[in-house]
Image 1: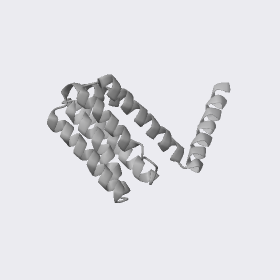
Image 2: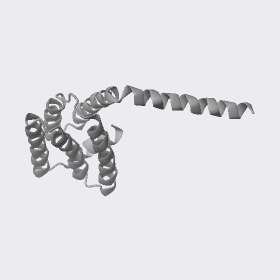
Image 3: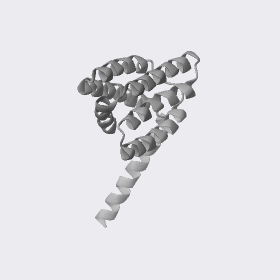
Image 4: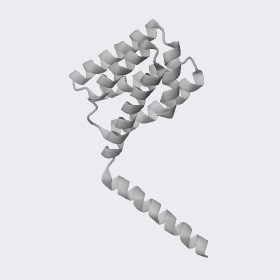
Amino acid sequence: IWLESIIVREACNRATDADIAELNANIHAAIAAAKEDDLAKCAAKHIEFHSILARITGNPIIMTVMNSILEVLGHFVTKIGYYDNTFVIPSRRRFMKHLVEGDANAAIAEMETSLKRLQRTYLSLIDAPASEALASKSDANRSQRARKKSK
């Protein structure tokens, strides 16, 4: 979310008409994929949106870091499977309005709100037994460290 906020601010300053057209085409492709119930394509288009924003910054380091994060996110989303993300497209439309107007603060606020909602959704979909296993492992590690300290 922090990195995306930096990217959005820079994209608001640098976006060309061609960049805006590419982002809008991406949104339309995501809508089409959703209508076809093609979760994989829809997720890929949503992730690609963030990659396009990173490219607009013109900063190769930001592009590399963001694309690495997005690759990991893509694997995570694939593992989760279907989830309700119907709020993303309306958010993208609001975001694009702010981007076109050059209102970086409003664009950042919209993006952060959307990403935080996605984050909550993703975390709620993590397999409970896997989460419990991680918690148990963490508790065991704390106990082991405490025993070592007491020796």
